[in-house]
Amino acid sequence: MGKNDIIQIKVIRAEELRKPDSWNITQIDPFIEVRYGGQTVSTKPKTNTTSPAFNESLTLLSPEGRDAPDMQYLVFRMMDGNQVKHLDDPMSEGRVATKTLIRGPLSVKLAGADQSYAGTLYVDIENDGTDMLRFKTPELALISEICKSHPENLMARHFSDHYYFSLTQQKREQLLLCCKSGYENPNSKVGVYAMRPEDYDDFMPYFDKVLRDHFHIQGKLRHTNSWDLSKVKGLPKNKQLDLGALGVDCACIRVQVDRNLKGFPLPGGMSADDHLQLERIMLTALRKLMANPAFKGSYYTLTPGTDNTMTPEAHAKLVAEGLMFDDPARDSPELASAGMASHWPLGQGVYVSGDQGCAVRVGYLDHFSIVVRRADTLLLNEVFDRVYECLGIVAAEIDAQDFAPVKGQDSFAVSPCYGYVTSSPASLGSGMKASVELELPALTRGGADVGAAEQAAISE
Image (cartoon, rainbow, N blue to C red; front, side, top):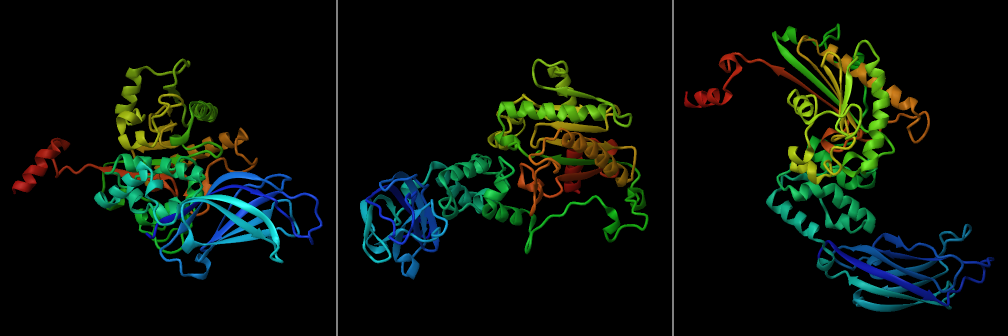
């Protein structure tokens, strides 16, 4: 038996159930609890019956060896969902030795605490823990192959059949959606995208391994986000981050901040209606920017049939200027596999400030991204302050719409451990990316023909 084998049991029905005589109740809502190897799985309760029909499949992990005391038997406990006083007490119990377990139908005699007959349970052993190959989907087989052929693919490196089969069927399907980009594109470095903010909680044992590997993190993991420079050590006394002090005389500084709203799936899992609703919420907030003399500007959308729907030519121009994004299906096969192109171009758009230095992209990898670019300053503070001001205005307007699931809370999706939630685990935390482009005049003449310069460097 392999280390990743499973025992899969279909709980079919029970009959002639009897409650303990000491229980002063007139109705029972029975459900089955199965215990094995420190694991407990259960069916849903049935209301007011002594002959319940369950028809539910339950899965238990079956590690190598069945010698441990809690692995020698499958324990079937008949519980009562209508109990308060006896909530943790079984009505009856039956055991099956795992060494004699074989596939096929099985009847289990249930006995009360006094060992008197208390009913019969009928189950079907769909897998006896000796072979899980027939339960493997094509996706699991592909992930196993990628783990061997592309060990740098973090999705495959940290995927565990053992963990996968410990999940409910619904969560298994959800996890495979998150992993789709990685197994359809083996050359991916991370290869996994969250489809919902809660995926990071539901699949924390998996995502946590991916995150720690990607960011090279050990020990306790808890992100705290702050824009306050006063507590940052090692900065100049005036807290001014001046590139000029480093001898730089010309640069383009770019800062991007990504955010996602609570109450929506992330872009890879959004429906067409989700995209359109999100754009309406964002447009309400962006009108505040357009009315602000420090920003002004306009919003351009790819959603067909609106007053500000842009032409293909206008879209191409904004893409060329770095202000807008292209169709993910054309831009990146990894993003297409992650569902980012599923409803293109609905709900996709961009706000551009009057000075062209600030853009707010809507509906791409994340619900929105603020991008500020400056080539007229060497002070990083000025660029970060611009981002902070823009984000504050947009956030206040979203909060003012009472959009947050709990009124008065921040409307953005945040994880206590990982910080601001983003579709890609690689962007979790502050949700921020910052870059500085420098001119290196000694590298090429006039900044042209980098390839020729590289060849010349090699030949010398």
